[in-house]
Amino acid sequence: MTDAALLAPDLGHLNWPFFDDDHRRFADSLNDWARRHVDAYVDHADVDGTCRTLVRALGDAGWLKAVVPSAYGGVSETLDVRRLCIAREILAWHDSLADFAFAMQGLGSGSISLFGSDWLKQKYLPPVREGRQIAAFALSEPEAGSDVSALATSAVPDGPDHIRINGLKTWISNGGIADHYVVFARTGEAPGAKGLSAFVVDADTPGLSIAGHIDTIAPHPLATLRFADCRVPLTHRLGMPGEGFKIAMATLDIFRSTVGAAALGMARRALDEAVKHASERMLFDAPLADLQLTQAAMADSAVDIDAATLLVYRAGWTKDHYRVRVTREASAAKLFATEMAQRVIDRAVQIFGGRGVCRGVKIEALYREIRALRIYEGASEVQKIVIARELLKARHTKIRQAAE
Image (tube, rainbow, N blue to C red; front, top):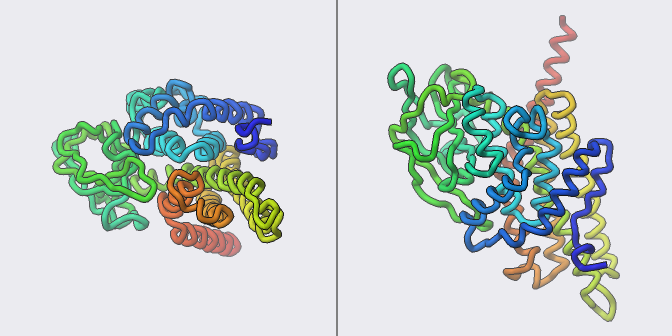
């Protein structure tokens, strides 16, 4: 058996009842494509160029059909969350930038798929599916990250058919390379979260500029956006006035589960690398893998990964099967899977010893890349608040129903 076959993602969990044969065929084909192409496309010294190349390649190969509904060239009537999770898990196993390129096409267009008019869907979704346009999701601000209700970016009427957007958005993935942004701004229908609306803003709209690029420990296209009297047609609004918070949360309801799936892919790769290294590294005249402490670390990681897999695909199956909000399930999946992956990768670094912190070693890259997943799309602490609120809401509902 070749080294390539020995170090390949284990897709055995796709035989679990959460999946059907179409999911399994999709996974096998995507993994084969990624094995043959991803390394050739990725250049971590040029993340902007790499992401542009990957988006086009994913589109040309048909994989971005997973991020849009079938009416606009996709493969499913509605977004198939399990398919999105499978794609992110596999791509993250191969390379984090491949996962990023795929994921942002989904997150950046997801609000359009869910709430856009038919005209907006026809305008934006086919180019996203084909990889000809890059999408982005612009929610966070310098003083409003986890607390969406604190958004300060404003959108005020400008005549009967336009609004003008003013403000800053930051931590925006694909910032600077996106062709359009889904932007959330305060329109003032009510205080707090009830006074927000969402708009699709083309990147070349006058008044929209890049205020600065953000360099992180695991670089990817990331920037701060400035809106200065950015004039946008009302036809580019998603949903109704004041529905921005609902739109943002419904979009995250789908894509938070996929963050957990990306963490799964990274954790699986870390464990695979650790098992390979421990089997080959000699210590005290025997393989490192013979030490009971090494075996304990690998066993803990394997159990962690299995538990996270169940949570991630429970959330995906529930969303796909019942087509209802899965706020608690998605938050639990993201919370556990991202925290789990941090533990698994840390154990793998320890098994590698000094090599585990050297640039150019896959484990070192994973150690940097996993950290952001515990923060973006809702930090772990926020997920705990969301889960607790869902528990309390369920209890209040039971009390009210009993009283009736």
